[in-house]
Amino acid sequence: MFRKVLVANRGEIAVRVMRACEELGVRTVAVYSDADRNGGHVRYADEAYNVGPAKASDSYLDQEAIVEAARKADADAIHPGYGFLAENAAFAERVEETDGVTWIGPSAESMRQLGEKTSARKTMRDADVPIVPGDTDPVESADAVRAFGEEHGYPVAIKAEGGGGGRGMKIVREPDEAEEQLETAKREGEAYFDNPNVYLERYLQNPRHVEVQILADHHGNVRHLGERDCSLQRRHQKVIEEGPSPALTDELREEIGTAARRGADAAGYYNAGTFEFLVEEDPDRDGEELLGPDTNFYFLEVNTRIQVEHTVSEELTDVDIVKWQLRIAAGEELTFAQEDVELEGHAMEFRINAENAAEDFAPARGGSLETYDPPGGIGVRMDDALRQGDDLVTDYDSMIAKLIVHGADREECVARSERALREYDIEGVVTVVPFHRLMLTDEAFLAGTHTTKYLDEHLDEDRLVEAQEKWGSETVTGEEEEVTEREFTVEVNGKRFEVNLEERGAPAIPASGGGGGAGGGASSAPSGGGAAGGGGGAAAAGDGESLTAEMQGTILEIGVEEGDEVEAGDVVLVLEAMKMENDIEAPVGGTVTSVAVDVGESVDMGDVLVTIE
Image 1 (cartoon, helix red, strand yellow):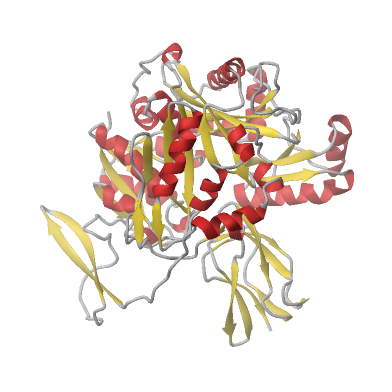
Image 2: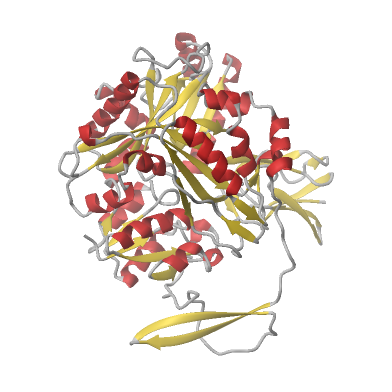
């Protein structure tokens, strides 16, 4: 087993990995940006290293800084968590090539093979795993899109080869849309994944999203831990996950699980991974009927990492997936057979995001956890990193925590979830808890007949407003007191530490001392380099009105050029934040005097986007 693991992530998933390490007797190393100086994962780790400023590309995505922190800490393994660099094959390869450091995850080769969708489709097809009717080679022309539509029928999905979560996917419903949607999909693929290649699939109108958790070791053993149903989605983003699926018979469940094992074996895959499938739903089915073995299901993609919702499978099987990630990376062999895996009861996971569901799930732009009192009791699990009094960091995703509930069956799980969400007391930051409470009274969700289109196409938005008014909290931002920061260099047992001291409400006092180190006595490393509804704000400038970013994100489209005339309310650009597209509107009418960004560029909160005079 490893001596010391660096967790190349933040927040609740970093703490989740660290807890597994602690139980295995492994020391932990955190990395953090300037924005996360006081983060919960920093508090939890045995030691922590600063890897750069708040901007993710200059910190959590800085491969050199992460590897350098591992060297400085003398860590012998790196766990990527999920997001950031977790599915970056180039980073995995860099770690694999670093002497004395092990990558906790699948090989870079497997990540490339399964991460690129056309390659993954070929692999699954050869392994006799059903794939959605479509191409296995990139498509180049609108004529090819139209020809595909004539053969397979409309609508047609154009999907980015490196995409996921709905990004880089466009739907062609009529032949006339082919050219525009093809160009948009290629542009998004280039911007998000540095890969403009796209491919075609038949677009399934009413699918369920069912995924299978895989564990595979270096000794040829492949096991699946049952399925999770992630059909309750908003704009292709999962919001509640559960297992086992309330819609499948045991026969169909076993067919899908066996297909996932077959695919993993064919790809030579090892460590943890998730094989995702689309299952064709019967629109006439009621909650009493289940989808049987004759139901069509199709391979969607492989997530070559631990997933947010891995907790559901852990509750159902009592298998600690993160510990097994560590053990497999250390060369250990799986100690249980497939027939030993049994799904006990029912489990649900609720993502507790700092978002207002009544306002198109707009993320909170700040705030502090004035009250943070999570639920407890039998069958209730909390995965979090924040604590009462912590400020909300808005530079990254909006997730505060994950609530996972387990019961003897789905009925008990729902009742226990209602109780847990009712107990969950969060004040100072708006959250989606009211949305979750609403879903636990929703007829379609309770019947298990919802599909991935349910929230976007069928849910009455007035119900979200009513739920927020009934059960919601608001974001509270108080006046910031003056904070004086002083930095010191200290030495403990021959080891040098940079210590940052914050004094609140005190006047600035000049102090000698070194550069920015980690807070709380944490070790410091060099910096090493160098989200929905409304993403823009206005600020007066000497030469006009400046439109600024109100959240960190990526520029997806720019609709104006210098010299263009615009009216107040015109969409000038599209900003992707937290996997959602935000139309940025002109705050005033006038002439565009400058465009400060390019398509594909990452921006931070406060960055100037466009100036209007």
